[in-house]
Image (cartoon, rainbow, N blue to C red):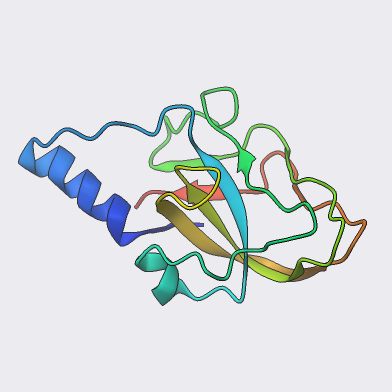
Length: 138
């Protein structure tokens, strides 16, 4: 995943080049799952195709213990597994992922498509193993 939303792009440009303060989301970083991944909608922050129902919830994943140090450049990956709640109903075909600054609604920060879409059915557990979610700022 390496696409930034328009929201995050503007915040970073203003912070780095225009000396405008940007408060980090702090403890509020969440990973969510998207059905019917459409880059153009997620660019503008529209997460209307996010999975829902059946115990679906974004997973809070923030801090240095959850992401590798990007000392080698603008890339990181999850250090620990990111495990979503067990689906108690069908979530549908999941084809994308977002990083957001809130557990619901909020601002989409990053988005990307999955290498392989997965149909999540009741009883399934959707999980990114450690190292499976790659993020590049380039």
